Image (cartoon, rainbow, N blue to C red; front, side, top):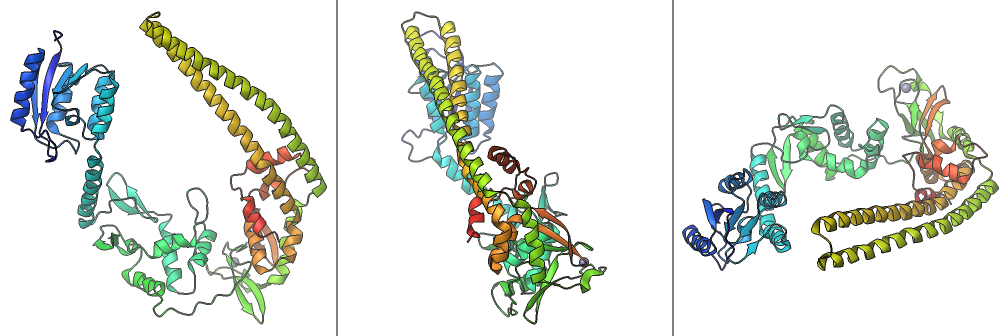
Length: 511
Ligand SMILES: [Zn+2]
């Protein structure tokens, strides 16, 4: 045996698995390992004995041992099997860290000697994170959650309308979104609104997702179906009493459940108003509501704040259509021009394509050359023609160069694919936009609603006049396109808008 001046710690841990062939008591592990140490001439400076299972991190003796090693009092570990050290990711991470920093120079097990750059060692450490650990962990988490729930604490992210207060580890009311939750319950309890209606109403009242999108009916369903809001917590069908402040009363929650499950549900008046949800009162900011009188649709301010003078103004739907259609005239573009621009842009991309192909070929050639260079260097090193230092620095250089080239190639390909994939939709958007004014007037009620939904919102009225409106993207940009712009410029404009409406949504309402 090689004489060894390395200082070893001896670590033994009892396995708890009965199917382990090598179950040995702590005493016999220690005895066997000590005699091995003697045979190999290892210098044992300290013995650590652990009786806890390694599956859960935080074994006190294990940590003590790592401290001992990382403080430099020892640089090698003697243990029964590698998996004694690495039954969970935290432990194995610590071991790997010490190996990488050269603070552990050797790990000796009963069967094998491992050195830090030994791949087998690293692999065994990875495998040491036995799948059993993962299983135990998830059931431990579940157990932990149940205990928390029983204490009235919600163990997960706060539902919509609440926030997790990290400082006090409690659930607190979200001052912004809680009002939408309450509103959703109140609206649904009336039995007059569908989930989709409510989502629309809340959207008009300012509710948006973090990314600025609309909430869907499904989100509303989730809210009114969650007993969390009346102070209860449901997990795996079981109810717990929560410590958090409720947003709605139990009575309101129960009413909603009755509506939800169709018990004594009031008759829902479901009349389709094409413009409902898009119109606002300029005077007080409320959404306009609609009603059906003598076969005609009328829109008016509900005066929900009680201060509006506009609420006696009834606007007939038919008179609103030409006003809206005139908005869409802003998109009128000479369609022949769009086609010409499209063709020339396509041609330009074709030229780009040739150019890019040649560049890609050059890059690929350099990359291939590097691969050859790399394998030659490995050969030279294996033949001992170059020193380890030179090899290390050269190989690093080559690998870095390879990484950069590969990135450059993939970036180029991606950029080009993007260009091609957006050209056609751009043309479509322009053509459709250009036709939207005519299309709108000819469309039936449902199509009208779809067209408006895609293009414009917040149509604000006073004295029967439209005073304000907001185009949605990409139409907000299209409305301002200079008439001599080329299609690539137009596309940039279109793409510079974040709320881009996918073209397939537009095409649905095309015919
Ligand atoms: Zn009003």
